Image (cartoon, rainbow, N blue to C red; front, side, top):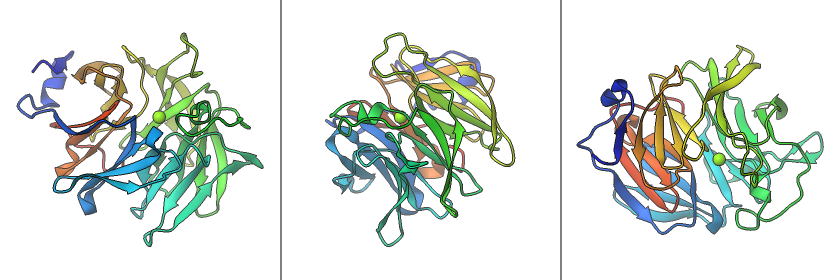
Length: 300
Ligand code: MG
């Protein structure tokens, strides 16, 4: 298949050359933040500049789930299955309760407003981790120009106590994040200052202690072309990351295994569908999907 690129023999067992790369919807402004709801057999995904969250299902196709969305970006689900998401415009992380109410989980750190939460994941202990770069308030296109009050930071939130703490602050632009299946590692993309052509852009990896403390932070892999925005980990610990030409699959040792070439920039992706083996891909203005031979890690 011309869209499948094998870089390492190990990748042959990860993909299905006879499975089609299909278009589920197209014509969007910019897709971001996909999250799978297995119990409802549907995908939610942000159409960020259009200030809406879309819903896709096999039977119903694409419909509008929420508009306005506060210029929603990244999404995940917490241990109770509730939708947790990032709002650029309102500069906060929210949780959608089971009755539909929306609770603001975090919008300030030490009295100062967050910048524009970008991506979010939950750890099995219930803590919620999110990146807070400046991107979402740098332009009117993705949330409205506003003045940053805090440096770009990676935060950890305990939703039980409301305690928000800095997980790591040596970033110029923390972006996507994902835990390894055993939660001993945390991958974070560093995408640098938005308008800097020579920004340092790489996926970094931190060691995670039992109490959630991070250490290390070395460069794990540098994506080319383009850079890594969001990514997900499969059951075997391979990292499936967005890139400038599609989705790249990186082995736990940092080796590029192969790629799914979409011919355009991918911002984010997630596993879902039957057995969490279908990859849903935010390919710029188009929503794509392909079945793989890997299953996404149980915790997205
Ligand atoms: Mg992002």
